[in-house]
Amino acid sequence: MHFYRDAYGNLVPLQQSQNMVLPVGSPAPQLEINWGEVILKSLMFVGGTYLAAKGIEALVTDGQSRRSSIPRDTWRYILRDGRACVQFGITNDPKVRCGQHVAAGKQFSSMEIVGPAVSRESARTWEFNRIETYRYRRGRRPKYNKVS
Image (tube, rainbow, N blue to C red; front, side, top):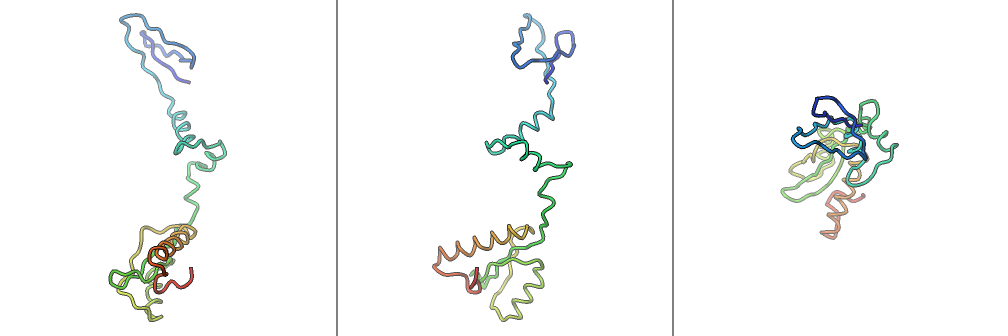
């Protein structure tokens, strides 16, 4: 419910259907905003899509975001030989994985870490999409990505 202050400074409830008629020369009323209601309504319209009460409940539980419970421990990387991409990959430990590639005899000049650590599912999606985009544009997979 919203309130406004009348000309005498009293808080008066403002009804949705109520028209405010002010006497000439009176100061404009000051609205008291219920920020909890404003935030709730803004959560209900994300990207123009209405979220049901269950959706809002899933987004905010006990003051913590549901996303914080997903472990973000997977790194995305690109092996490069000069400017050429020779492999797209994901790993939990980039230093160890780089050593494994060297031990396997792969020819590359750098290992580029892409962005921050993300969830395993997100990393796999990224890897698949990068390999498929590369294949679509060049007609083949990167040199060391033989299996998706």
